[in-house]
Image (cartoon, rainbow, N blue to C red; front, side, top):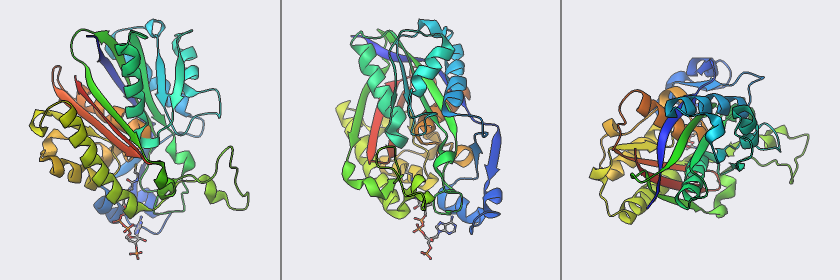
Length: 322
Ligand code: COA
């Protein structure tokens, strides 16, 4: 039985930091309100000429370095993004060219904040079935570009960044299972109304920005994340005590705490980066994973549970031995 094992992680955050104090100068809010309701203190924002492909390339190069391999040895690239540089070509093909991995399949996945978990689940299946031996999986977002910076209910929550992992086929356990779900009935709770195909009213530019019914999303996220964790544990005949690290999607510290509480897991076993990164959508899980790996908390052989929830709604999890 062959597994897909993570052999390198990488992350990248744009240089420019926007604090809650910066935001309180722009909209009717306060730094304290943002921190109390979300746990967020700051977010990184891409420079005007910095795109999702640029962020993805930095994170990918760091993951390749950590794995000790060259880009031309990759045989699959999957990028999760909601904010690609172009309608087409994909971000994945652009970073393929920059990394010199010519010829292998490269494509983007769009599942908003669950995007990286979807991408990892897909890449795992390529590796397990022998269709790829080495895969690069990236989550990269420039979410700041689809925010209405006059809307205090959304602009406080998000940031930009990218995270990446390199997977390799191995006889040693790696990804143990992945669980992907969606329920499209909830579209209008969290969405960008405008689109390439549906267009938008030029007199109503805020249709091109994130619209969200925050408290409904919050309740749904807590309920759904509890369920996905239960599903993952029961599929692996495990209990929560077996989890060394929970690496959740970083949307709101209160959602992280609620999920950990449902699991009876102390916060000391949860990797939380939301305070410094805010919600970086598809980049949030791989960025948090990279932080946990690089600061030495996540050790080889440990059991790690990744989970995410996002627009659509979409949600999912990946259980792995690091
Ligand atoms: N500053 C000050 N007040 C604000 C505010 C802000 N930035 N944003 C909203 N408020 C106000 C509201 O207008 C409301 O006022 P009212 O009672 O006079 O109507 C009040 O605060 C409470 O709003 P509510 O939306 O119920 O607050 P909340 O406790 O649910 O917190 C969120 C709001 C957005 C922080 C929270 O709902 C949340 O995090 N939701 C999930 C968002 C998310 O994770 N999205 C991505 C999922 S992938």
